[in-house]
Amino acid sequence: MEASIYIPPEMNYWKVLVATLAYFVLGALWYSPLLFGRIWTGGIGKTEAQVKADFSPLNLVWTFIMNWFGAYGLARIFIWVRGEDVTDGIIVGLLVGVCFAAATVFMHDVQEKRKCSLSVVNTLYSIVGFIFMGIIIGLWQ
Image (tube, rainbow, N blue to C red; front, top):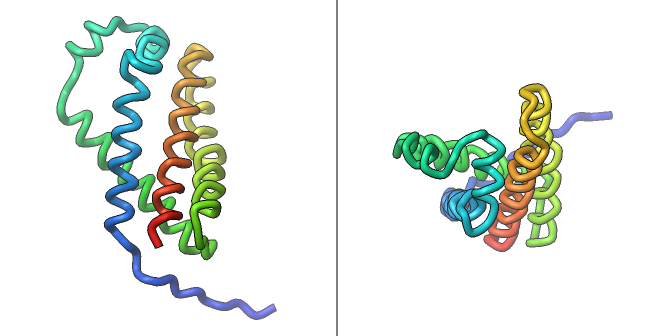
């Protein structure tokens, strides 16, 4: 068997940025009282007032940076598997979300004896977020 080198096309950083923003906005909604904020605050053992008191804009900066790394990695994998459309984006996003992001979050939550409800909220956020990013990356050709 002969190995071949696949040289991917240049990365489209605009789609990575848009996917990053989508994941970031999803997180703001996901962890708000509108969706799962109450379950999340209960899971981490804090009240909403305590979370607000602990707030730092630096947390948002780090979250955005980590969202960017997730979007970039997903876009890079999409290129490597020669994804072509939104269906491929959903599949790649689902696989990355479940196999890497959610599995890692859940593994840490289990070892740290976190509440099951917190683990479910956090892992589903990863899965849904990567699927959303996969949709954006798959649509943007």
